[in-house]
Amino acid sequence: MPPIKIGIVGLGKIARDQHLPALAANPDFDLVAVASRNASQEGVANFATLDEMLEGMPELDAVSLCTPPTVRYGQARQALRAGKHVMLEKPPGATLSEVEDLAQLAEASSGSLFATWHSRHAPAVEPARQWLASRRIRKVHIEWKEDVRVWHPGQHWIWEPGGMGVFDPAINALSIVTAILPRNFFLREGTLQVPENCQAPIAANLRFSDSEDTPITADLDFLQTGPQTWDIHIETDEGNLALRKGGSQMFVDDRLEHEAPEQEYPGLYARFAELVARCESEVDVAPLRHVADAFLLGRRETVAAFHDEG
Image: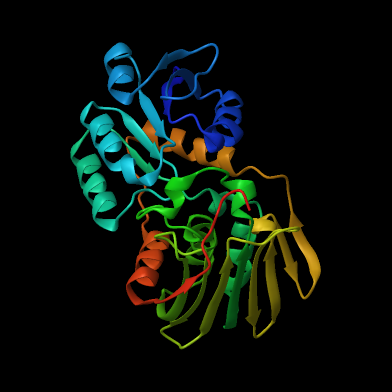
């Protein structure tokens, strides 16, 4: 099978840091085009918009959308209608309704739709799921704290409606727990701290439970300086499991049980290649649904204004 001719739309930090290296290392793909208003890539065709890319390169097989979620729906719909396979960065869209509409369109089209959750491909996530499968879970606590000025410098869209604020990184934690916990869980209450000059929260505290009333809590912060915290702690009837460093390490009762090099985006593109070969789609909105529930049910607290320069 010849390589999949793919174009990237939106050549920002995540595309340069993760998508380009993953594609370069995967022989199933041939990056042939980039569409970006503010950047270009050597060695491929460059366009200002997706419109221009689709018109100028009809031979494209697939597109990978790395644009902000508020504009992704229209782009994904356009690409699917053009018969292309589509990969969506997380979160897959600005609303659940948009993503569900795209999933229906993909079913009726010749293209695949892949709503990605890169943290699910962290090396210790699947071992954690397997370890938990035979144990009774008593308590879960998510601690996801990072510095927005380091990871999203100057990205003002993240504070606008649809940008999600602290849930942009925290949805990674939700993507992990929805993958490893054996039962669905539901938001019971939450507090969202929203800067007075923003439309999205900068911190949040959430309380969930499942059908067996298992307490599941989350402490989220977008202003942590120094060492960053991406940890999930799970207490069971046969010991305590901790996923650390975003799912790259698994500890059981403080013993390191699993660790491997980070391969999240290579894992995503390997999966995308499988979906394209089968003309199948994979669209799981569970993490985004929990974020939507937080905005629906969470109590809002106004906090000090946020300024990107500190």
